[in-house]
Image (tube, rainbow, N blue to C red; front, side, top):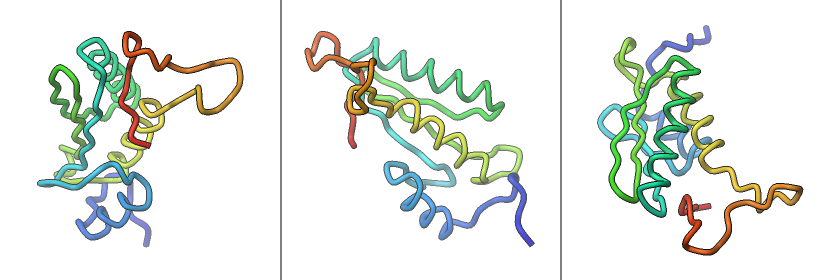
Length: 125
């Protein structure tokens, strides 16, 4: 029988799914985590606000730690007391939005300039 979105996923399955679905994320101490490196404080705040918007819309809320040039996002399902499909779904949406690079897609949107004065995310892919 298939599980529900609130069923806790075992660590081995989490590690396997992260490798396949979210390779920049990692499992640590019952959380799936990802650190985004930014170009500075302004970019850090934009990442925090973006993650906040996505989490609020999903009604599933991460823990966030930040400093001048990085943001760490941590997800676990507090009610279920472990990582569930909800965490994977929110992580995938966060990854999709934060990692979006329109300049690599072609089309009308050119993406962030390479000039350091306008730097945003330090993309790792």
